[in-house]
Length: 266
Ligand SMILES: [Zn+2]
Ligand SMILES: [Zn+2]
Image (cartoon, rainbow, N blue to C red; front, side):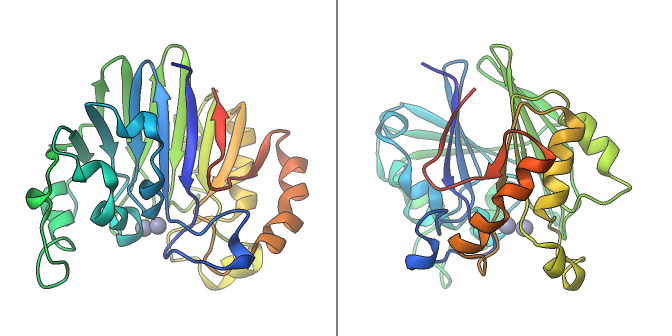
């Protein structure tokens, strides 16, 4: 199996739909990483509904959650893999707000907010408290805490000499930039929250996200081979993102806004 990353959901905060979003996509954050023979999903936004056949046919899948905000877990409600009786999903998440990952997810997936809880689904779902470093088969997972209301785990996956860094829902403050840049050092692919324009940023500094300019500068500083901006703002149309794409290339030679369905070889 070739090492690659498939971006299944690019949108931040809430899903969007309509002709203005058809190029970059409307589903919320979800990324499928194929590395060292493993299929590892990062976040379970509505993009998880588009898991490809090769992933759906695996006897087990791993899901790592950056944090439990609704846009990053809401896809679990209709995730096709969880409706298979012969499937097993291992879900890794950090304790937040005094709750483990199972309890966080149950806040949404239990009556009266949702008709069934996760335990009622056919698949065998197992939860694990996420350690700072752990292994999934031949993939080493390292995490560090980012800057976001309620907290967020930044995730680095390494296997077969390839590395992917996933930084969603994080403010790249001046104070944290050096540390986050070191965490991302020399990765093959950096996926980074680039939700805002500079203009939006001025009004939304405390919302826990970054500008695409700051994200591209992180890619440059860290020496990432490739970088893709994720968590696009729900207001940001295809035309607006296309207009800004050239500016990213001025900062890093292989840096662009991720689009839904994009497959990136490692
Ligand atoms: Zn989010
Ligand atoms: Zn969030």
